[in-house]
Figure 1: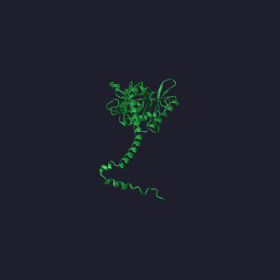
Figure 2: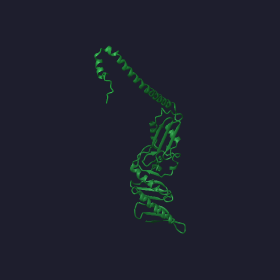
Figure 3: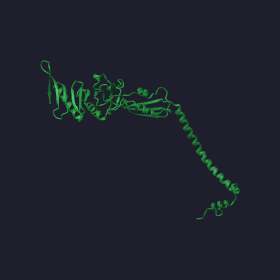
Figure 4: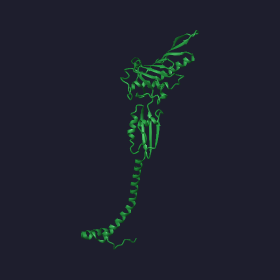
Length: 307
C-alpha cells in the first residue's frame, strides 16, 4: 500500500528539536508558534462557548431556587396522626407555628425535638418539601391505665397521670383522650415509685404485668369480661382487679392470658346460671375458686362458692 504521508514533511519531533536551538525571541515570535497559539485559542474558545452558557444557566437556576425559597412561606401543611389522638391544631400550637412561616428559616430538627419532648408524644417526623409544603407525622403514647397513689384517698394526694406500655407518665387531657377515659386506675404503692410527675418512666418490671392484663382483657367484649375499673398490687406477685360489675379478681403476674381465659369461663358460667360473680381466684390452673351471689325464693341473697 502506498504511504499517503508527505515524505518531504519534517517530523514533529525534529521540528521541536530545531525550535529549541533557536533563541527565545525567535521562538516566541516565529510564525509556527503564532499559528499553534491560534489553533489552541480557537479550540479553547469553542469549549468556552459550550461550557460558559451551561455554567451561567446553572448559576441562575440555583439563584432562582434560593430566592424562591427565601421568598416563600409555608402554604401547605400535611398532618398525620398514627392513633388519631393529637389533632393538627394542637400540634401546630405545640410547635409554635402561628401565622406566616418562612421555608428558608424553618428548623425541622428543632421542631421534631419540640414535639418529642411533649410527654404524650412518642415519636415525630417533620419534613420540609420545597417549594412550600411541610409534612408532620406523630405517634402518640397510648394510655393503658391511670396511675395514682394507693394512699391518695387517705392523704388527699390525688395526683394522677396516664401511663403507656413503656411506663411513661403523661397528663390526662379529657378532650384529646376522650376515647381512653374508661381505662382502669392502677393504684401505686411506695414500692412502685417514689414520686409522680409527667415525663417520668416507671420501672418496666412494674408496668409489664399491668400492660399484659389490659391487653388480654381487650381481647374480650364487655359482655364476656366487664371492663376493669381498678388495679391493685398488694404484693409483687399478686394482682387484684375490680371489674365494672363489682367482682374482685385475684391473679398473679405470670400466665396472664391463661388466667384471663379462666375468668371468662367463670363469668360465662355465672351468666348461664343467672348468678352474679362476687369474687374469683383464677391463679389455680385447675378448679379456680369463684364466689357467687344467689337469690332464694324469698328474694334474699346468699353467697355460694364453687371450684
